[in-house]
Image 1 (cartoon, helix red, strand yellow):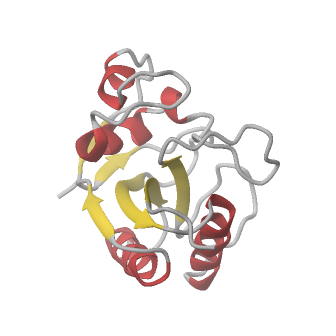
Image 2 (tube, rainbow, N blue to C red):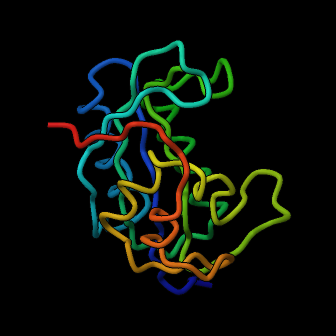
Image 3 (spheres, rainbow, N blue to C red):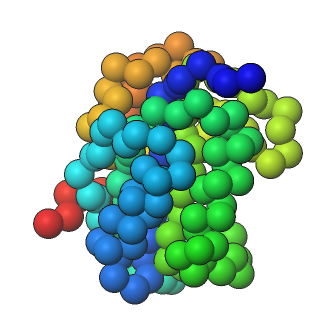
Length: 165
């Protein structure tokens, strides 16, 4: 049975190697394996969050049209991370690539041990909301019933997030 097509919003992050190239490579894999990438934010540079004694990150939000189930999408994204050389050593540690599902249409998954949708911390993080707002400002968070732009405007996170050239 084929699922109805949904728009998923992903956040990509990288702070090792050729960071800009890592984002481009990940997006190419996403387009190849998940579906059409219909939106890409600018690339943003941010200081490390959570574990701050590491290099700064480049982050980019992308919108992808997909018929995959959310757990199937997660498995493919984890495989892309691995294919690109990601090694998980510590929580919030350095990474070649990190790809998170922020929204999967209006799907809500709260009881999943491997996946929670929408992303449970997205509303607290400027490095997620700035790029996401650029491509999905009017998207309504399915739990909070608020637009992304509204969540961003009420955000208290002080982390510096700047467009990267």
